[in-house]
Length: 450
View (tube, rainbow, N blue to C red):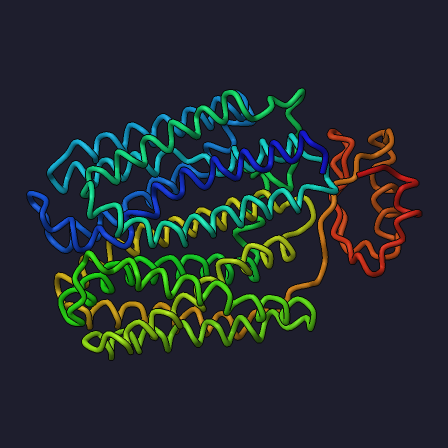
């Protein structure tokens, strides 16, 4: 990566991290601090936990498409300003309804697709995977840090302080976008990073992608169930004051982060992603049962939470890669847009259902709902095909006239190691799925470059 690409990738990773940190910090504390707000009920607290996911899921793809029309930076800065407004609204409120409204506004600042597209505009194809990995790592680290910082900071400044800190971090992200991140000379049409409406029907009808979309929906659905149940169980049943919850998240996050790495390595090297995923979904189911059964035993409860986050972190890290591999050539942007929409929808509905279940049936109700959802996911996962071990590249073609498009597509498909081809003659671009171990790179470069 050259200096421009490093600057773009590191700056956009920090933008993502600052924004997601502001969202994530609230998850481990809302359930035990929001009951001090006027009008609070378990159902409304659950809605506050999941509200951002609803607006994110509705606006994720539209915001990405808007960035194609008016530019990446205006959409990103506009989304961050909406996030700031939501944070300030919630931070100035002492009622649960205004907190819910603030959380909806926070989620309405949906910038993920625009950030990804801007990163694609600023990086070359051969370095894009590395740049995207930097963004993914920043999100994962922000989640882990937020789980510890949230309980610590809320002791000093309360819920209002957390929301105001989120607003300050978002302002910092705006400054980064405006002055630290380069403005691309031209905005690239890249179907591997940006959703396309014409492809949406195909992606939504793809059986293997549907299983993964259902999976990420369930994963974030049960995560919101956990954050409704766990803080209350730690405080009310295990006897751990809410001021000390931070160390539970610190221990479980650090250990689970390192514990998942060997499984990722084995899955990749031994090409065993499918069986490991099935095993990890099974672990997710078992961990939820253990959390429910050990709510009054602190040591066992912490151990159960550790198992949950081992499963969660592995799936969160692995599933986007599997989506990228399964998506047809030239459809990765649309597939990832649908995947992200399902992720946020799961978080939104998870918070709402968690609050209702806890209000009606307590912790047992939350466990039953989570167990049913995870069992359905397990049934879907055992019928999933093993993902192909391929990579995506975008080939900038040497000039091709429309009458030669079909013949060129056939020639590309005949190159050793090329597994799938989508040629867009209007863009003078070919989107390819390749097996790096088999690719005849010299032959492929006769038709274009990447």
